[in-house]
Structure formats: structure tokens, C-alpha cells
Length: 212
Ligand code: HPA
Ligand code: MG
Image (cartoon, rainbow, N blue to C red):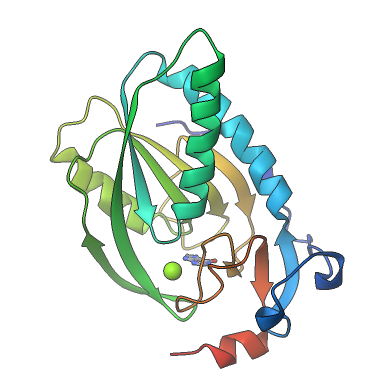
């Protein structure tokens, strides 16, 4: 497991951008505080992750495993970039895909209980949206062991800097972010905000409106 996966580190002082500088769906206008990571930057970073992954995976066949629901945008975009590399370079990696669903959050808090649903061909590359404490990921890796994969590599778009971390660090990381709750780009708050392109910070009003 890589201990120092290079990534974009977003500092604690970073406030993101005013909502009015970007296009935001009208139905979320008062539910968000700031744009935190614009969609374009997410894609640009993902493009480079695809290249790094291709370099590291050599000629291995990959089973790309998407952790739903929060990982679906990142997974789809990452695979599109990997497919583009497969089309345009001398080396290419055969890929199959699979999906698994994990649920551990209610409102903006972890319930501590992890539900796993689905997945029939579990092995190699695991694409996750966000890793905060790392507890969910450790549980998933434990589960994957039963399938005796040759190799498991984990790629996460976001990793949170938090004192609650169990010390887990994925092999590939898009951004390291402070311990704040973010939504958008398939990341949700009680199932809302997945239909938002940018990664944003939710407002108190938004938290209240969509509370369970
Ligand atoms: N946003 C959405 N889902 C999450 C987060 C977050 O910041 N942390 C863990 N699950
Ligand atoms: Mg969620």
C-alpha cells in the first residue's frame, strides 16, 4: 500500500469560490455555501490519475469496482480517461467493471454501521468517492480478501484530514481536503446534491432542509 500517494492538498484556510461565479442548479441555490472544487478541476485531476494508474497497473487485467452511490461520477470519468489512454497508446489494459453499494452515513454523520450490497466479481481496482476515517475502506478490503485477488489498488477522489482517521491511505488520491462535509459530483447529503457538478460546501439552511 502506498504511504505517500501524491495529490492536490487543499489547506484548512481554503474557502473555495462564491456560488455566483459558477452555474448552480436553481433548486440548490440557497442550500449551498461555496463552490469548493470546481468540476473542471476534478476532471483535470482525474485525467492525470488515469495516467498514473495505467503506468502502475502494467499489463494486468483490471476489474474496476465502483463503490456506489457516491463513486459513480468519479468512476465513470476515471474510466473514460483510462479508455482514452487504451485507445491512444501502444499499451492497453483490458477492463471489466463491477459495482458495490456501501452505506454508512445519515445526515452528515457516520452511523458506524456499514451496509454492503451487490458485487459479483470482486478483485482489482476499487474506485471510491471519499475516504474520511478510512473505516469503511478497511472493512471493504477485508471483504475483498475472500476473493483472493492478485492485487488490490484503491483510488479515491477525496481523502479527508481528520483526527478520526484510522491511518488508512489509498494508493491513488485526487485531493486531500480538510475535515468538512462536502456534496456534489455524486456525493450526497441524505441522497440530495448528487445532481450537482461541482463539489460544494452545504449551507446550514441546506442541512436543515434535507435533514432526516
Ligand atoms: N460528503 C458526502 N458524503 C460523505 C462525506 C462528505 O463530506 N464524508 C463521508 N461521506
Ligand atoms: Mg452518502
